Image (cartoon, rainbow, N blue to C red; front, side):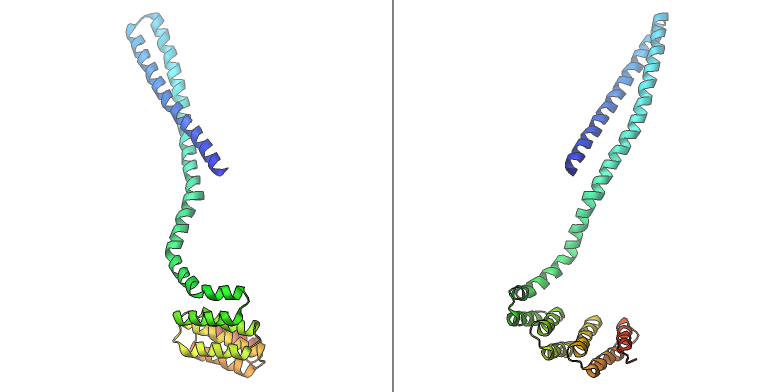
Length: 229
């Protein structure tokens, strides 16, 4: 429906431009007739000169208004098509050019694990996530997903703490990744194992390891909520 409207409006604008050009030709013909009549000098011809002049001025006035209107309509149609259709397509293509490669890597290494999760094969999913972690050692997501399965599906919070500790201690993580994993570990201790002492210890490590950062501020907030600070 949208493209039908574009085509219909485009045809109307094209028709308007055709009329505009024909008006220009007609005006030129009238001016030529006027010049010929003026050269003859007869009274009858002079009356014709006046009539032709009025007609030419009328056409010129109509053509000027029509030209302005057609210019606005043409610019409007082009602008609408560019904003509604062309610009989003360019942005979509640019976004995929920048991000597709990274997304494809994640999808490739974790595809089997996701499939096994969908089937309810939790042990198989854990094994597939471990393979994904081995393929991408600096990707925190496989470890997080393994711990989540252990906590929520297998009822094994101790296994989840072991997974998260293995992840934290086994790699030189970026600051945000290390803090994220440590917060998840603290949550397991606090929420699943009721071991607030260990949870507090983990958050204090975050404060010491990442001072003057949002991570330490979040850790202080969490400790305050627990009534520790």
